[in-house]
Image (cartoon, rainbow, N blue to C red; front, top):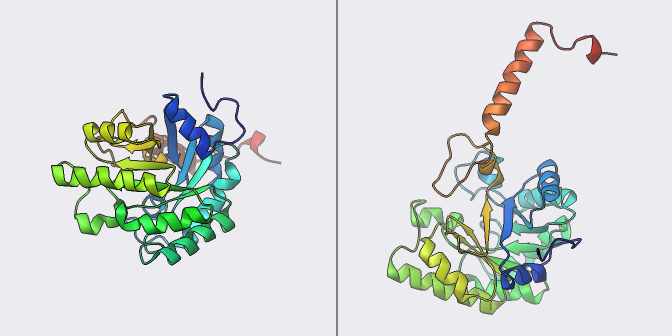
Length: 271
């Protein structure tokens, strides 16, 4: 039986209970009210207002350009559409890496101005002080390890992370450090499935995988990729459930044809 079937709002406590009961956590990104409403109605456990909005909503090459103000705008829209899902918001690049005080100020702004329920930070031991400071203020924090897109210029590639023993060991250490610091969950992105299983089994808190194998406690995808709105982006870890790009393209072309031929609007479509 589902842990969260009858609850009015998913909480971090419920996610913990889901892990303990072996129930997988379903998470997708959302950036606007309409999509959030649909995903919430579908029964998603968690909606992530991801800094991937920089890519899929604004057309940037990386997640780096999106600002804190822009993230708050997207978060406000998603919170209005989500009556049941837990809403987590990414702290964008430059809003927390400098020092823990800046991280706290950024997290407080997100919570106060958007009404979201938690924030997410990329990194391990190097951000533990910021994680602790944010949690001390009463704000739940989700961690993010493996491929961390805000560090893409350091990595130089979007290839799988932690394939070698040294990086895998650091990831395990970082995961335990984030748990010890008080994170309620951690995203594991684009790492070997075997490592994803090891980390998930070593932690008390839930892991959410994206390209990290089936043994994580939950999974997350960028919704635009999952529904086929993103043209030409099909990484190995992505399962595309519908192709809305072609569907919308065909609909727009049919609309153009009907307008050009004076078929639209017809007698029933006018006053």
